[in-house]
Image (cartoon, rainbow, N blue to C red):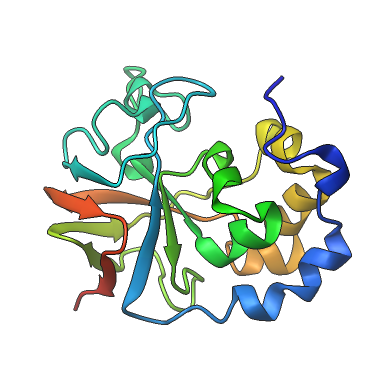
Length: 191
């Protein structure tokens, strides 16, 4: 069982998270900010670089997505449409508080930007640093590990009702142009 990212007595209630919904949804529609990068070399392991090279072949080099740990192709390798997991920074902040508690969520990028389907539907191209990405259609849902780390109410908040409508658990994207991304980079929609 994964270690809690925050102490169980600090788990946010569903009501407390719902009160944060207007703030969570107030992120910029464009020209957001990359707040954190997380590479996951293996289950439960996290590396938090300030900058990393990403590629269409490898996503975040060394990240375990390539081994089919989430969505997998018929040959067992990771589905390229699940290369990069992204969550709204305001949402993980409402759930986990301080940035030191964000990485266990299991996402690769935390972005201060509106990632709802109305603003970033599947097929939306965007740029971070010198790299380019596209939002994919795969659903990103909270799992037992998310419950263990942040509590059942947090998982219900992101997976059901308003959370599901607004994709609060996050989105998947794939790299379409190799490049370097760094914390603090602007996130810009293309096209």
